[in-house]
Length: 506
Image: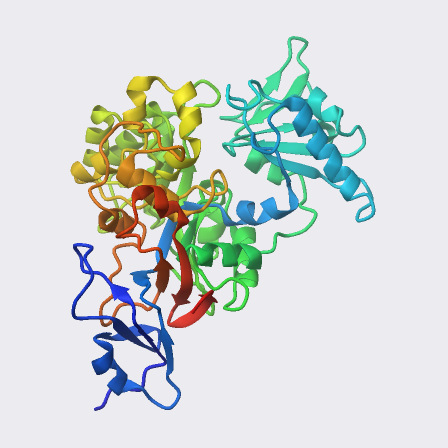
C-alpha cells in the first residue's frame, strides 16, 4: 500500500545526529497525521508530495524535537501580564516599589472602581535587591482603601497591606496554617509578610478575572516549547476546568500535564481521574501528585513520617508523587520518604528543584530511584544573587545537572517560571557552562554537550519515523553557538501534533 501524501514537508533543515553533528543523509522530514512519516534527503522526500502537501523551506535553520518544560506555573505566568513589575531592575528600592504601585493605580483610575486587588511581583529582599522584606506599612503608603499584594521573587512569600490583610481575614489572632509563617511584630500584629500561604490565600481571595493564556502561548512557542508540566501545588478540579476551557488549538496549542495538588487529590480521584489520563478532546493530561516539602517555618513540613505516609497514600491511589524540595535537608527527607514508601512499578516519582545537592545528597537521590527535575536557568538569571548570598563552597553544588547524570539519576529540566523567565535556552546555557548571565563561572561540573542538555528538555524525543511530530525550527544553531549565545535561540517555526502552532520567518 502506498504511503499517504504527507500533510507537511520541511526541507533545507539542519538535522543533527545523536552526537550533535549535522546529518549528511537528511535535510527534510515529512509529516502525516501528527507523526513523522519520513526523514531523508529532500530529493527523496519530495517524491511523496501530494496535491495538498504544504512544503516549507527552513532556510538552513536547525530542526529539533519540541522542548518540554518539565516544571512551570502557567496561570501564574499568564497573570503577570496584569501585575506591576517590582523586580530589582524595575524597582531597586522600597520607595521605587511604592512609586511603581502608585503609578499603576493612577493608570487604572479610569478603568476600575478602585477597590480590586493591586498585584505586584518579583520584589527581592536580598542584598542585591531591597535588602529587606517589604511590610504592610510600606504598602499602606500605596493605598489605604485598596488591597495590595506583592509577591516575593521566589513565589513562596508575599506581602499584603493593611486593607489586604483585612480582606484575607488575617489579624493578630489568626492561627498560622501548618508549614506557613505569618510574620508578626513584637506587639503580635502581622507585619504583612506571609510565607508559604499562596494556596491559603487563593481559597479566601477571589480572582478579579481569569488570566489569558494566548499571549503566554505565543511566548512559549517562540522558544520552541511544545509541552509543559504545570506544577501548581493547589491544582484541582477548578484548575483542570480552567485549562480544559482555555486550551484549544487556536488559543493554547501546547500540551499540558497538570500535576494534582496533594490537598486536592481526594476530589480528583473521586471523579475517577487517573494518573496519565488525557482529558478527551483536549491536550491536557493528569500528572504526578504534587507535595510541598518546605522549611520556611524553621522545621520541615510535613514531618518526614507524615511525608512517607502521604507518598504511600498517593501510590495507593495510583499516583506517583512530585515532591518540592529545594534545600539539602528537604531533598534528603524526600529521598528517604520515597525509599521508605516504595515505588509504583515503571513509573518514577519526582523530586522537584534539587537546588542544593552535594555528593552525599546525590547518593541518596540515586538510591531513591526518583526523577530529578532541577532548574539550571536559576544559575543564569539569579547567579549574582547566589554569589552574594550562598556560601562559596555550595555554589558548585547548586542545580548540578551533570553530577546528577553521572550518578545515574534520570533528569528532566524545568524553568519554574514565572520565578525566572521560561527561556529553556538560558537553562541549557547554564547547564553546559555553569556560568551566570554576566559570564561568571559558579564552578561545578558542566554537562558535556548541548545535545545532552537538550535531550533533558525534550523528553528524549528524536527526529525519526514514527515519532510524534512536535518539532521546532530554531536559530542560531544551538549546536554551533557558543554558550553565551544560547539564551538568544528562538524558533522560526513550532509544530505540535503535525500542525503549525507558531511561525515567524518561515
